[in-house]
Image (cartoon, rainbow, N blue to C red; front, side):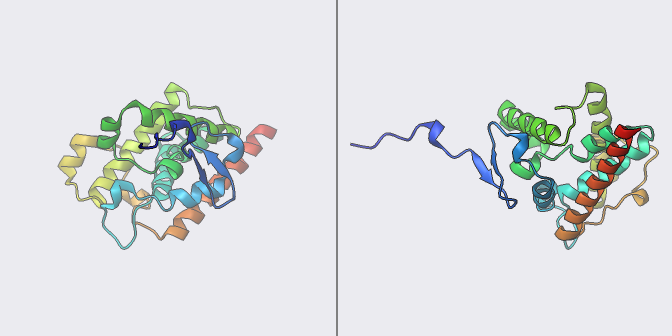
Length: 209
């Protein structure tokens, strides 16, 4: 007689991080989130499924830095909390990886549910609102789309015409303002932590003011 398959609830649904934390993927706790794990993971996740030019992959950590730079330039009055949410806008990908948009559409709502739970845990860990407001989300998405345009043209083999069709034509931001050349993993990881800590200092200062 063939043994019955184990119940779905018995399947492992957590990941051990290098910090020693054990993160539950289905019900993530803010207490199990560490910036060192986020930076380590994002620096090793490739944008565009790795289909980019250069000696190094263009990591999600570097992409996050580019998006935060664009957001800051476009929104000079943004609060430190808004800057931190922007830097962390793809932070769940340190657990679930960077799935390209066409595949996200195929997978559907299950992926989004896990992503949103992770976002909430990450934000709460650092004293942020669980999710950005609708208005902030729109502004972050705008910066993200501008970054995608330049990544597409400079790294992913898109023509300017093709990239404009998918991402629109950026205004007031040019590629020379951004660090688009793919950098080594450890450099991207260190710069991500450095920027996170700089924004945390701004948040602390704002709280004391």
